[in-house]
Amino acid sequence: MRIGRPNSAANKTRVVVLTADSVFEQSARTTFGASAQIDLRVVSGTLAAVDEKLDVTGATVVVIDLDAGDAELQALQRLMVRAGWPPVVVVTQAFDENVARTLLQMRVADFLVKPVSPVELVRACARVAKGPAGSEATEAQIYTFLPAVGGAGVTTLAVQTAMLLLNSGQRVRSSTCLVDLDFQHGAVADYLDLEPRLDLGEIEGRPERLDRQLLEVMLSHHSSGLAVIAAPNRPAEMRSFDPDMVTRLLDLVSTNFDYVVFDMPRTWFSWTDSVLLGSNKLFVVSETTVPGLRHAKQLVAAIKERMGDGPKPQVIVNRFQQRMFSSGLRRADLEQTLGDSFAAAIPNHYNLVREAIDRGVPLDEVKPGNKITQQLKKLVLPQAAAKVAPQPAPLLKKLKFSLAR
Image 1 (cartoon, rainbow, N blue to C red):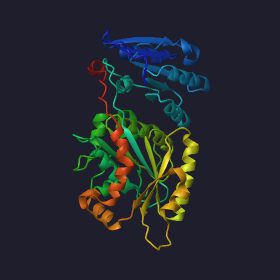
Image 2 (cartoon, helix red, strand yellow):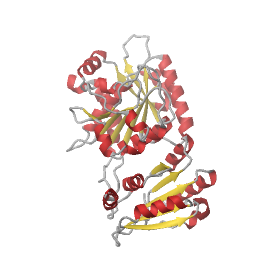
Image 3 (cartoon, rainbow, N blue to C red):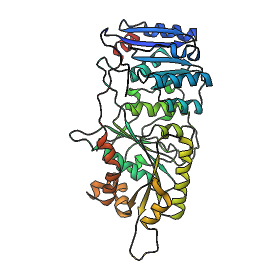
Image 4 (cartoon, helix red, strand yellow):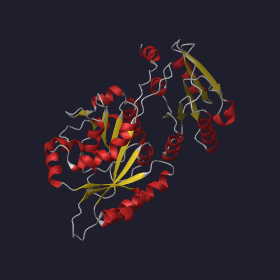
């Protein structure tokens, strides 16, 4: 629940900026002073010094220039607890994986790293600002699939889940994006017979260039209406991408779609924590083998230790086949081994999956009502049906136009 919503009587967008940096203060004054529709209030000093004296009543968005030390982060935590509304955008000079994780756990609306250009600051505020009628911004539901072992069938399950979510709307299709985060060996584009269009080299040096227009250029579109983000394979390269670039990409995707499905690589990168923390549903995928179940159980324990109060991982056991009088693993074995983290067992239909992959189509197009799709529906659609998609928030259009002149 959000409290302290802005009063629309003045028909102005109120921005509160707190900073101890005179250069950033001047930049903020110049940036937001370009529009008569912006009511700017600048508070000088550090958040730790101002703390509970910072008045954000009636604000549309709050910008905090933060020195990411312990005292400042503790003060920010108190602010986030005290003021569920308005959304907070953090600007910081020091940035690393621990800072990113802390800010995500605090549920700040967005964070930027200095130097921050005026347009970049406006876009961040525009993404999180709420309209004068108090409408809520669209918040994507994020489904993440993480392999416990190689070859567990993660991509197949991610593709089928995305297709189910795409068609989960009662009257119109829900906007859905499938993101292949395996930048080295990703297979999503191949499974759907699409050309991967994400050019990481284009945005790696200047991630601030990534906006909705550039994202649209880098999206691939399946005939079903599913949007796909995938990069061309680079099997001979082992690269580690800037976590800020990946975070910006994922933030942009999550603000422009109703549902987002992530196909994760098995390797743990510096940005993996951020993706997992932002997920609504986190599925660990294992094959039906004893080593696979062991790896899944170990991965679940590791995620719980790292994520703390983050999303609880659930295990999907793929290609499960139980025959009478067989000595293989039974469902009772899966439940006993995985405990309350066991989510579902997906039946093994190799020929069906192979044909769908070769044709670049969803499983239901090959065989409507197949058992794999039916099992995924039980797992995924109850959560999707419970989601009510509010209207997207209006942006700070007038300020953007004035900056563009």
